[in-house]
Image (cartoon, rainbow, N blue to C red; front, top):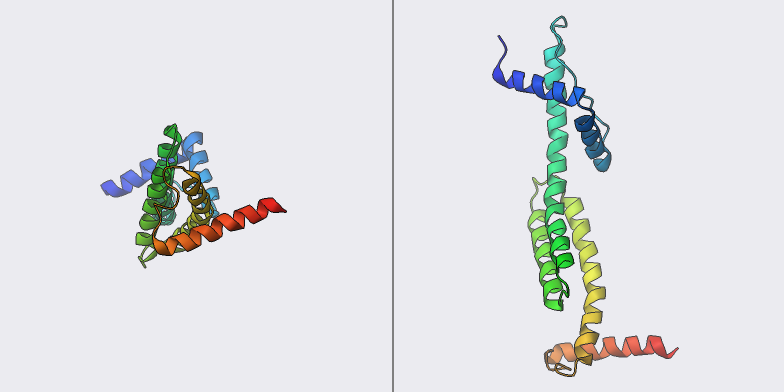
Length: 176
């Protein structure tokens, strides 16, 4: 008599093995993660160790898929942000600022978790977003300064010096 969990593994392995679509999708996930593809192993009645090998392979596949789940956890809010900003006809600085800060806060929450398998990926994405934000922020500053309604009113005293330096730096680029 076979345990129901073993039966579920048998059915899953068989489904993966016979379905080209599922097998190709699984192989694609492995390539995305740059992990060697683990081909499903079937339980064969005449081979007494085959159940053990099948369950052992399933455990390895499950561990790999958990790593992929962590990557997907990191990418999901970025995908949501992309949809949000793409759906807006005119995303404002406020929209973009909120999205960038939200994603950075989200990534910060995972960077501090030792049990999270993708800390390095989270830190790398966070660093890249910070780099982009620094570039984008300069252009937002210039657009705010050039806005007749805002000028320097929206900046506090400490920011005004920085804003003036950024604008002067951009003007220098166009002089030469």
